[in-house]
Every structure is written in C-alpha cells, then in structure tokens.
Amino acid sequence: MRIRSRARLAFALIVSAGCAGSRRPTTAVAAAPCTFTNPLGRGQDPWIVRRDSSYYYVESDAVGITVYRSPTLTDPKQNGVVVWRPPKHGWNRTNVWAPELHMIGDRWYIYYAAGSSGPPFVHQHAGVLESPAPDPQVGPWVDRGILYTGDSIATGRANRWAIDLTVHTLGDELFAVWSGWIDSATTDRTPQHLFMARMSNPWTIATNRVRISSPTERWEQRSDADGLALQEGPEFLEHDGNVFIIYSTGESWLPAYKLGQLRLKAALTDPMNPDSVVKTGPVFAGTPTVFGVGHASFTTSPDGSEEWIVYHAKVAAAPGWRRNVRAQRFAWRTDGSPDFGTPVDVGVPLRVPSGQRGCAR
Image (tube, rainbow, N blue to C red; front, side):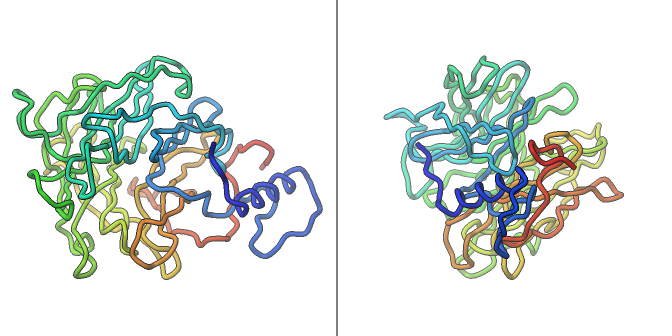
C-alpha cells in the first residue's frame, strides 16, 4: 500500500473542497479553487502518459514496478498496482530504475534499467516487459528480456552498460535511444553518452548502436571537482513536424542538473547520423530556489489543448538524491522549439490543466 504524506493529503482536501464551492479560507500557500501547487509528491524519473480519459504514471522501487491510474495530471499517484517484481536471480534482479510505459501497436511495453548487483552500479542494462491487455494495470506482463546495447549486433557479445532507454516511431521505423558508456568499466563514475539504434520490433535492437551525442559543451561539464560529465534521461518530443530529443545533463545529485536539447535538422534526416542533430542548451535549468531539474516526460491536458512537462527536482541544494515530482505547462517558440520557461517555486498556485475534471474554464 502506498502511503501519502499528511501534507499531500491536506493539500488534496483543500483542492477538492475548493472545486466543490467551499467558502473555507485558505492559507498563503494553499491552492485556490482549481489550482495546484508543486511538488506533486516525492519521487524521481517521472514517466506519465495519457490514454483515453486516464493518466498512467509508472515508477520503480525495491518492490518492483508500479503503474498508477488517475483521472488528473496533478494527482497522478492514485490506484497503484505492482505489475512486475524482479526475479530473485539474473541480470535484472536489483536496482530497477526509470521505467517508461509505451503503447506500441495494440500492446503495452515497459522499458526499464536493472542490474545483477551494485553499488557500484556497473552492471546496469536495459530490459523490456510486454502486455497484450488494453489496461496496463491488468497484464499479464511478460518479461521480453535484456536489450542488446553494444557494438556487435551480429554476435550479441560485449553488451554495454545502458540506462534510461526510450523508444519512438519516426516515419515507419522504431528507434531506441539511451544513456550508455563507450566501454565497460569497473566504476560507475564513468561519463555517459547518448546512443541510438533501430529496432526490428519493440523488444529487439536491430542495428549496432551509434553515439549521437556526448557531453562536450561547457554547460554539460562537471560542475565541481566531485562532478561527472553525463547525458541521460533522453525523451522524444514532436511538434509541427519538428523532432527533438530532450535529455538531462550535469550531475543528478547536484543543483546543476538541467535539460539539454537535440533537434533533427529535417524530418527526413537520418536520426542515426550524428551530423543530423543540433544541440542547444540548457533549455530548462534550476533557479536559486529550485535545484537540479531534470529527467522530464511530456503529456497533454485532459482536453488536449495544452502541453505539460513533468520532471523531478532536488528537495535541497546539498548533494544527494532526495527528489520530488513537479509539473508545469510549456509553450512553443516561433522557430518550433519548446519553451519550458523557468521552474516554478514550491507553493506557487498554478492553474490546473485545461479540461481537468471539476474545474471548468
């Protein structure tokens, strides 16, 4: 059973009463009727997808992978169901990270990273689960196994470290993008790069990987002597024929964590050609009061008229991985690129997504 904090429960009661027309006075930090405040709750690496009238939010913990189903974007962790538990033995028995839920064709897939041991986390690889059910909370979920993310697809040897794998269809081809190492290593303090490969189906990598980006820009370099240059958490984002890969860079345990952007030069360009992408950044970064923003996913309001970014941020500036999940609306610039704005402070009321139940515009 998932336990919510007293603060989250109090916040939910305030919003519910406000939308029902209550005249109860609110405090300075309480949300007005039909508004909400960040954070949405504790968590990291948020992945949320809207399907029909529901939002599905997926996360991992020591128990396994849980899929939540909610009618609202601003309260996503409702009705949680553990859909998969790691095996007691094998490559994916521990350290289950950053699951993503995708509908491909008529089936659901969950992509995730896991390992056989750690720390140090030097055995992480990408795996995939499949379900034929129309409801991802029902299953059954079948383990389709490990994905090959190395340099010899013909032999399948020397599989390389990989996390945060995501998939996307461009034209009629399915592609995978992930964060990985160039070579195997004995320390997890190893630079991370973005790799891409074509897929023959949702559970099979069909080509050798291609490195499409490395943390070479000054704003991607380590922020202090204890830092590490990395790129991770890639996510596709499309708008009006433009294709972007939004990724996280900097160190996730430090305030400098931020988002960068890769943009395909043209819709028909081969995305696996590194010369086909243009890097820009940072496109979303912290403020003096919001620390370490990153690992975003993207969705729309219930009526489809607004686009929203859901991301995590650190709860304090000190090094560490205590994080919470936040959401805010974003817009588009005249050149077709996303404008994520500035991360909004905790406690600042924001209008709920357009079409959210009980809050008419």
